[in-house]
Amino acid sequence: MAEKQIPYFCNVSIEQVDDGKVYLNNGERLPYSFLLVLPPYKGKECILSSKDFEHENGILPVHETLQSVQWENIYVVGDANNIKGTKTGRAAELQGELAVENIVKQMHHEPLRSFQHETLYFMELGKEGAMFIMNKPSKQGTLTCTTSGIMPHMMKRAFESYYLLKFS
Image (cartoon, rainbow, N blue to C red; front, side):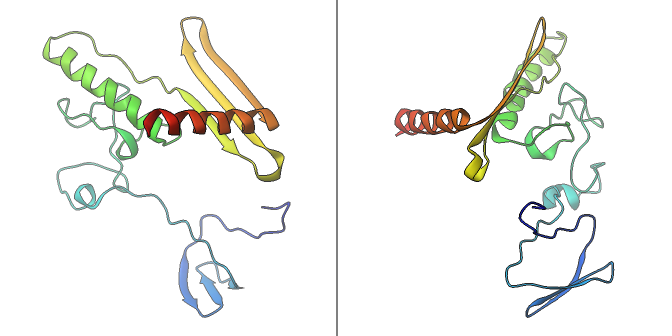
C-alpha cells in the first residue's frame, strides 16, 4: 500500500462517517472517495452471548488437540478457535477431520493427536504474478517452500482449472 501511496491506519476505530469524511478516535479526519473498512474479527453471536463460554471476542481457547480448554468433550474447529496460523477453509477442513479422529480416540481411551498446521497457498500479487507458499510437517521436520513470479501464477491457474473440472 505504501508503494501505491495508499494511507492506512491500524489499531484505530471509526467514530463517525460523513459524506466524504471519516472521523477516527485518534483525532484524525480523513477525506475519502472510496473507503474500505475491515472490522476486527469476532466470533459468532451464540458464543458472545453465552455466559458459560470463556472466550476472547467470541474466539474459544483450545488445546492443540482442538479440545475446549473449559470442557474436554467439546472440540472447536475453524474460525471459532484460537489456534495460531492462517484461518483458511483448508485449515478448518483439516481441523474438522482431526476433531472427528480425536473424538473416536477419546471414546476408546486412546491418546489424542495435536493439530499440525499445514500450509498450502497460492496468492495473487497483481502485476507481479503470484506467490506459492507451502509448509508441510514431516518426520524430518517441516518442508518449507516459497516462490513468487509467473510460475506460481500458472500453477494457480492450472489448479483452478483442475478443481473446476473435477467438481463440475
